Image 1 (cartoon, rainbow, N blue to C red):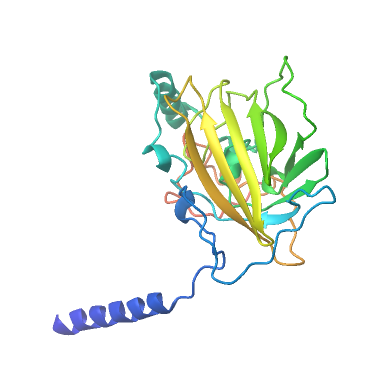
Image 2: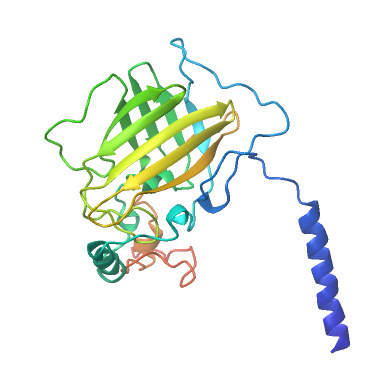
Length: 274
């Protein structure tokens, strides 16, 4: 018994020493689990963000960041449901299949918490987001227009952009309220959802993103979360994402209700029947 205890303690000491010697994260602006908060500046002077011919920060490039898990509602201490929102959440847990498992678009704000890379292409009148996730895109005008009076609901909503100093602000309304979750944990949204995103590039290697969500039908108050994306290394680009090819959930028989629980099955789908 003493030998076992000594062995365990020795292992703990080794793990502690390794943890202390672990180098700092690659991204000096990183925020754990998507927690909102001020950006921490690196010790060394960063390379400045590039600018477009009209003087705006150039957000163009390939970007990636970690998946946010449990951080979206941190600023309000958990989802502030209305009674209708709580019922919708219970419905998603018991009757609604994860839309991404059905190869439907993530939309926003869900695409904002994904760990899948994306590309931004920018000119003076438009900013385009090319998502590896579901191999889709979002094109946002930045020309002073407002939202159309008659909107066709969509997964990404109708987004219009404007510059506030060096920050691109995107205002989106007109969302689908069926087969669409705001995150990976089945939290719902209604057709009244309103999303405001603030994008900025503090330096050449990082892209800061702050998101405010309000939905008076399903939530009693608005909430804000933020994260910082890192520029992908030179030469890395997006991979083609054909969602229904080798669909783990479909081929493995995991299309159940509620969010996908990876603890219940491994990420190796059953071979499809010929």
